[in-house]
Amino acid sequence: RALVAKGLSKEARLRFEHSLSLSPNQPLAPLAHKEFADLLCGLGEYQGAIFHYETALRLEPDYVQAQQNLAFTRTLTGD
Image (cartoon, rainbow, N blue to C red):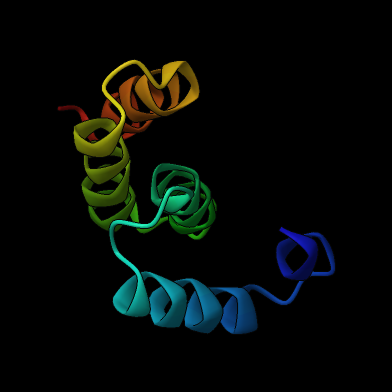
């Protein structure tokens, strides 16, 4: 999040991708997938965002923020 707040989206993306590839099922994975999806959505990469919101929800089905953000992103894509 700190990198995104500083406007370093490219670096944040690389770190999310690296982190998730190393520990896809770690306890904080749902949060990492949701945060990565937020970044992708902000970059206009809606399909990637949808994938990561859905992944967060597979890992934590009651994750309200991921549910809400997924619904919002789907409205942007017309899904």
